[in-house]
Image 1 (tube, one colour):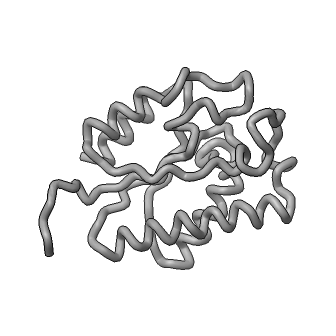
Image 2: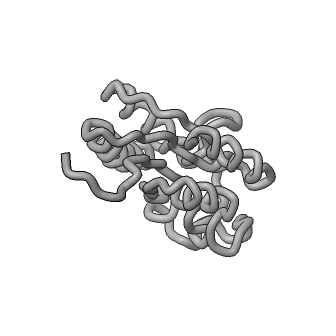
Length: 160
């Protein structure tokens, strides 16, 4: 195998972890990125797969706040399933080629990318299903803006 400087470690992240500008107006908690999480990703020298934001690409930047139940329509779920399939393809490809996909980070409170609060968001549910079909296990964690430092500490343990 050809050797180069890549870490061969990957983390899949919700779009708004790297781009708070994509959030519904009025609920961005950072000017750009969730600093605590990004600092750990940089420090641990992992590659990042940024998931598309289905809310942004489906409903636009000027969308209003909606609940999971409001988004949970056949058309939106099908849209998230399509996105999840592409993400699962990347995860599977990395795994098959000796890379370690160490975590999927969602954002708790999101109707699409929530992981731990109440129930998973629609995109996360679809991604869990697609990864299970492929028999690929990856730990998932929902980042919480109020507890970003604690979530960053969890991530650093996973990446160590």
